[in-house]
Length: 368
Image (cartoon, rainbow, N blue to C red; front, side):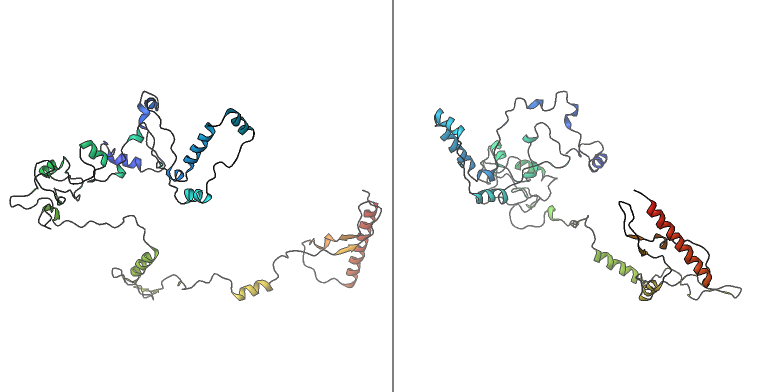
């Protein structure tokens, strides 16, 4: 309703279509405070939903309240000291059906819909349909509510000026549809006016006489309306089939380039650069690569086993009999030498024994 009367409908639609936005409340420019106009309106008491009323809880509570009202003061004091439980026992099957089978969702507002004064008293147009007169409107117009044989008061004006342009396909009895049975045209009380016809007596807007006449203007040839969904996504199978069709189409507009190369004026042949792309690329490791990786010892070792030595405990309080030779795991980088001779190996062995003896002596002298 606001888009039609806006000065710039395109801008307003763009603002309303922006994500995570709400309308500006209409009471932002009011001088009186918010909800001050509802001070004189009586607030109705809370009413239980229908699916809870069907359990019979209201009748049970009313019975219990009547019984408590008939008790004396002494009985009421005794009831406070020793209350009796289980006065209102409801069948669990009824409770289950009420909350899991017959429960109805409450009416909630949508995102961006704000409350304003008098919103609950407005007419809900979503429940109304054009062409169907509600009982409230029939009562207001003085029409009977239990029959459809009385024409509405605006039928005479529609017969004179034509059907409403906003609803071109709406069937209105007495205008472009036959009138109900046992009814007649005329301007007498209960009459359906004068049928709209041309000079030859043919209907202007529709089959008002119920003779299946197809010569009126409403059934002229019109462009067929496209009722397909415009926002539907294409499936993967359709996109794949379209791609295959595009690949199968030959390219007639291009120039065919010879694969062997182009001949230059000097007699030399230029070979086209590039490598052929293989059909299948194997990304997994082959058995040859895996066996080569297992057999190769060029990489560093993941761990080193330290040799264990057995020594004396000594005088220390936290002594131990087992130690590990850490020097075996430390590799000092240096030049590669040839295998030592017999004398050199003996000297190294003696030097190592001396070092071990010195370490053992220091360990014994150490005190915790």
